[in-house]
Image (cartoon, rainbow, N blue to C red; front, side, top):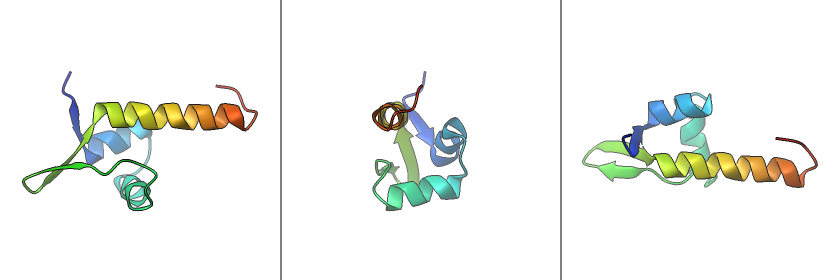
Length: 65
């Protein structure tokens, strides 16, 4: 599998809009994307790590996964 995703692909994986993903990045809640020339790319590992953080946050708040 390709280790890099476009912002649109990463947003689709997270089930949010690209603009929401851009806001998460600007707020420091999601890792800053890699710049390759003029293109921005997100590491698959960053998306997976973000989802794991959401899961663990949910568990510490008393929810279930």
